[in-house]
Image (cartoon, rainbow, N blue to C red; front, top):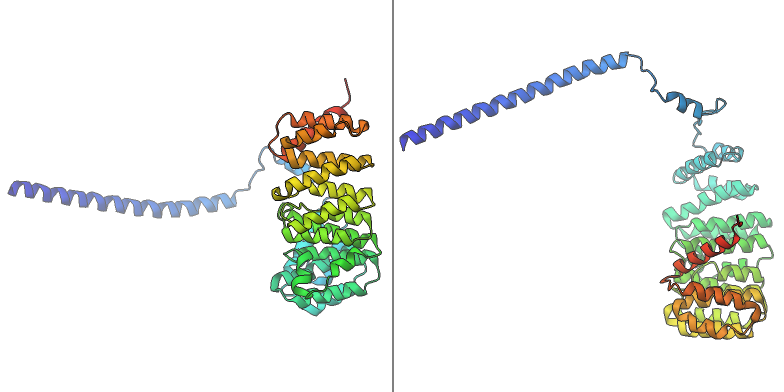
Length: 374
């Protein structure tokens, strides 16, 4: 027993010596590496670098007349002058725009507001107005948007009014809901803008709806319902049609879907009826039977060929394979549309599970038909 204990003791001592030796060697290696590394680094730094074999390719890729990107002082007037002069270079304009966005928090409010009120060039005003609206996105003060809306109402130039309307897409949340609900407390300025005598302003309204709907794949309930309600009161048919097709109504409530069906049946403008038909193609599942019935019934009484084409598209989109019996019943209604009905039936015979797949197959078919024959 004593011998065994002694052997274990000597073994422990031997292990400890080995561990200490290894630790010392590691410390020595690290120190040596640092010293050597410093020497090597100094030698490398003092040795001129030769270009890699393909450096000539990189050098010749840059035009000999190209100038390096110059630093732009972060001052409002300088940045806006640079933006105006950089019209030929979209990349440079994006760079200047980002510089301005970074300046918003530190820029005195009245300095920015003064420039917004006096700027008369639409492209430059777009940058200033975007920066102004960004102030609301940063601190959420209603007064920021109130001042903009008030100034917009006093502006007489349609191009500048349209620019100011488009700037509202930068609030960080749907301005189509935001202004009336929280900022202006019930005042419906979008309803006024939809009736604006200028096509530019009305077009800017439609652009805002498309931009805001796209942030949620076209499924913002509030945005969709606002688009439908404004389409119902729009005097200009192209504006109403643009609003109806600016967003999916998949998330809209029953009342809004009913409004679209009413426009399909009652509008005197083919453009609006076609847009209403396409909107119904995105109706929610809960409204599918009523919407399919409305589309099929309108097809029977419709006289405009473009509207009938939109109706066939939406019947196919909404029902997919369930649309087959509906299309078969409509096949003989209009002999001129029979070929189009047959084409939809042929596409649906492939049993697509989604509209995206059906639309992809349709586009492939159309591209093949349009391709020149060899």
